[in-house]
Image (cartoon, rainbow, N blue to C red; front, side, top):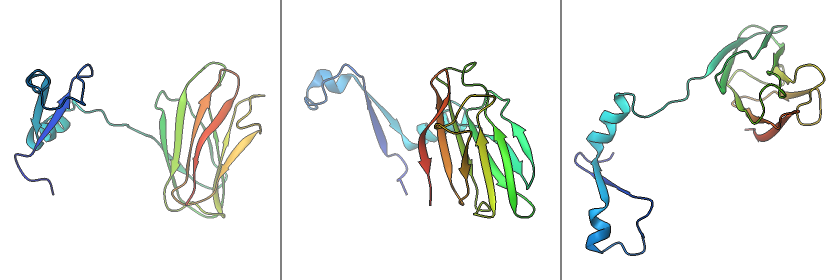
Length: 153
């Protein structure tokens, strides 16, 4: 645990951090206690990522029609496949979307992430997520979706 009263220092971007001991550099540093940081976090001053929640089940499908850039997929029911269609890469150039799953996904419970229409995702029609705690980050190049990160356990 971090002790009460511990101070954290922020340094202005123009301060030469190699010269840490100078009076001028020290004057440009801000010090925050752990209590001040916690207070800022609780006041909403620190941003959190609110996910688009999807409760997937076998044979189900949905279209990603939200401005949220993070989705969290849970699974209910028996074995099967759920289809998630991303928004148009053409209509959303340079957008980044993360798709993550919880523990119930497996080789028997899978999510296929599709690009709409003739667009592609990593050169194919869909990208399959079929492992617990798996996820992908996809980025639109203005034409197609590209998987820029894939996580597997």
